[in-house]
Amino acid sequence: MKRILILCEGQTEETFVTRILAPHLQQFDKFIIPTGLVTKKVKAGQEFQGGITSYARVRRDVINLLHDSNAVCITTLLDYYRLPRDFPGKATLSATAPYDRVAHLEAAFAADINHPRFRPYLMLHEFEALLFVQPSAIPVALGRDPADISFKNIGQFNSPEEINEGKDTHPAARITQVLPGYRKALHGPLIAERIGLPNLRARCPHFAAWLNYLEKL
Image (cartoon, rainbow, N blue to C red):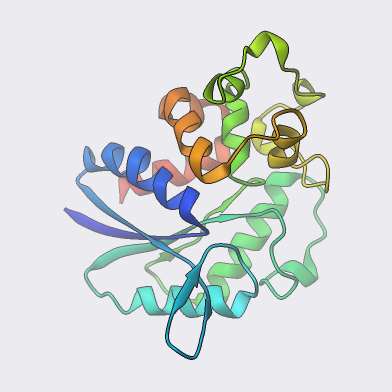
């Protein structure tokens, strides 16, 4: 089997990879290993994972993973939303369309790492966008009746990946505003699993392109 390492932003993404992506990609002769982004290390050597505080830490973790010569690909599962200012391509970002913007950043990220086995992936605009593939599944996971829950203005987007990155309008904010009991690490992977990978890739073209790439490696 071909070994693929996925650098994940946090526990939610790691769980998503372990429970949903890895079993699927195993059918394509791929062995998937998720690893959490190390965001801080104290003097005693203890490491803390989750969230991006600076690009330098992301770069360090990617380079470390590339030392595994048995891996055919190193990729990432990081949120586009709230990337640090020092992230490659941020200073030259001019496009307005979400798919053009993420393509610009991914290209700059790949150019900075400059390794043939590295293929970056940034989630538009964050993990919770996947959950809006089937909005009714979100309240169900929290024991609520979908008929009682309304997510405002999501019908205006052609894809959940286009739900914007405003402070109060990014995907996670839209959920917590009406469902304050939502916990990303607990509910996120569960909801995505219930929606199903075929539905996720059908509604999210950027995610689908990444998954297609991994399948065909």
